[in-house]
Length: 479
Length: 127
Image (cartoon, rainbow over all chains, first blue to last red; front, side, top):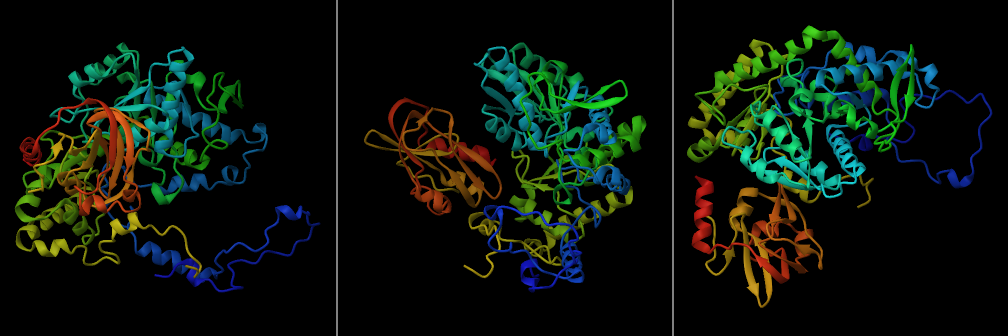
């Protein structure tokens, strides 16, 4: 399909700006462009068709089942959008006086308070714009804490080998050295290896619980105690909070700081659906180091304040404010009963689908799972030449988004499936049937799977070429 | 079965090592490149950087994953194969020609495997 730039024709436009009826401000010539920016010029009708065509070529949670493991692609309720579109939230300016935006400050205050309640933390910043940004902020808290005590020897962050790739990346960005600890046979942290890894150079541990294979680590209290006894802090990656929200709190497991992905757990749009929000929270002893400004309540008024030893800003203004509005809407809509029920349904749905597939597909861990489960296609690859990639691509022909592939790295030919709580039994039955049909076809006509998908606008894009020679901008016809 | 030249030494973390006088030449094995798949990016240290035995000195990124490359020796980077930065595909095409770095002044050398020992490591990982 054509790009917007290719559809552009000089003089076409989507809206006509009314003539200026006030005196025009004059700018210094040094501030003015010599030439107009090369923006596409396109009529509203063509613009609408362009995006409709794009939408028809892609797959979203509004189009079909989207069981992308570790990503929690849950449905985004329409009421969230309705609230975020209220003029009191949209027609404001981040620099207007706080006393004229009390409702917006209250949203930030309440969202922070409720997220603290759900995670067992004491304070939080809504500034980080994504999960990894939240991780980075949490690690800076750990760094500031150790340095504030004059302890400069704590330079290492311990990360299990099953961790999300963002964990070691964030730790490195925050100036730490990463130490990897192996997983045990059950997919949890190898306690003996952890004991050996901790020491006076341990700044902290980063952990996801339930972990990346979808299992709750039963030794979690031992794990956080071992790190604390060595003088380190414990950081909770909230990627998998959807399995336990309202049931178990990172703060009660012994974690000192956390980040959440509002676009995973709290039903705000994910990925291209809108900007993200990765709040970072902490226990009281870390609060003085949080980014500012934060919001506090003084009698019935909300005001901004700067934490005493604040690390400064990690993002402009208050982050992606409207995402907080959507998350708050979700939390208040579900309430004290709905939040734990959503988690329970997420876990039930994952176990339901896992049970339907077990016996046909090899499960990486033969036990009850939390909100997601991991299968291994290693046997099929060796016996039938059909890989996890082939199965994932074939699912597209059934109108299902592929699960996460080849992750976690500790499981070969992995497919990680996370149905989320909003899927009905009928959807899960249809998905199970699709998975089983694909397996049947793997036995009878593997070649067909190697060419899958057969009914999508795009089949198998050349990922290697895209990565080796990326085209990152339109060249306007000039090579 | 992957190619494991008899004249090289190996590590259990899939690096190959060859000596050139006092220099240790380090690369990625055929098994490593085949498990990683098409390599699209490599980050290498600079000449003069220190490398530490058992610690990562480079990152290779394939379509599937990013992995560290571990140094079997402690010493100083004497040469870097810059050609790999522009063309990381060389690591897939000819893993035993595509050396990553040469290390001088080696103080500490980790446990190195011969071809038979390394073949056993690969077999165990495939099982």
